[in-house]
Length: 129
Image 1 (spheres, rainbow, N blue to C red):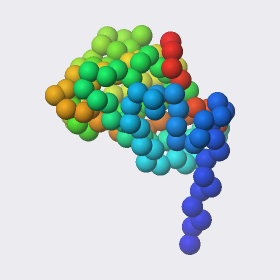
Image 2 (cartoon, helix red, strand yellow; image 1 turned 30 degrees about the horizontal axis):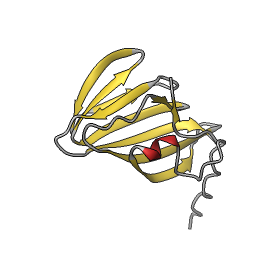
Image 3 (cartoon, rainbow, N blue to C red; image 1 turned 30 degrees about the vertical axis):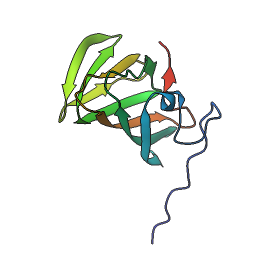
Image 4 (cartoon, rainbow, N blue to C red; image 1 turned 180 degrees about the vertical axis):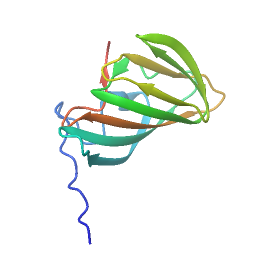
């Protein structure tokens, strides 16, 4: 029988595990959090729900974000690339440290499933550019 991984340590910013600065704007549900086979990295999977006409605010991650639009239409702005309009079924990739902003265009709540490969102990998201 395998032993499940130990729960992750709280992020370096002192917030409880599974929360970060974006939780004040969006509903974010951490699905899983585990140590990666890449030394110094964790894998975190999050379901984010963005209400209509709400933006995440410009933010960045300390590692890759590999995402999939589960429901809705989301405008994804990036500082390093053209703005995309993503629909249910579309995937996206945000490189480490790249500031970006997601806005739900409606008609209903946008839902994104994102997997982050982040530095161990770092907050998953940090607001600002």
